[in-house]
Amino acid sequence: MKKICWALVAASSLAFGDSGASKSWSVDEGFRDLVVAPAVSDNLALLFSQFDTELVLCLEGELRGADLHITDFRMPHILASEHGRVQAAGCKRTGKVVGTWHNHPANSRLLISPDAAESSRNCYLSRTDIADFLRRKDALISVVSCAPSVLAYWRRQDVESLTTEVAMLTAPDRQIVRYDSWSDLDTSGLTQARRR
Image (cartoon, rainbow, N blue to C red; front, side, top):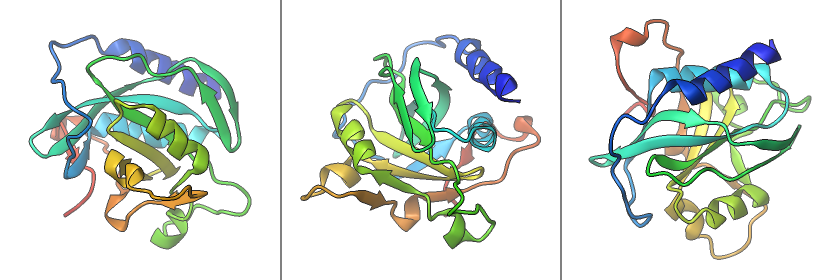
């Protein structure tokens, strides 16, 4: 199954060509909501379910009005992938890359359950995650999947506003997203990641 998932990642990375000019932005620009394409959220859930080691992806998207739309992802060269740690080459600087995604696989101390409090317990940025996000000056967002259909995200201002070095940063409640997999991707081009 892992071979199939790696093939899926590779195919997703190659399947979408450059579909025209992308909007450029300043990292000072914020956004109100995160909007994730259904195919992207389905693939993130599949990757989370199939790997017990950490992975990292480069998220592609654009600002549309006050929202950040995630439309695709690419996998950078993975140098090492272990439980609790991933080391990868940086994302290629293109006008489409808006940030990164990585997973926090469940471990024996954390059983993923439908219970919201239980499934979001693994939604945090570690000290290493925070440092990596701050180092990527052009990144608008850092996303962590902490269950197959649960992710959390941090805007740049959530991390830059830290006045002291922290060991772990939990996501604001509004930025923990629970979603259902889409069986019919033709019903909607995009879905609002966080229900209002």
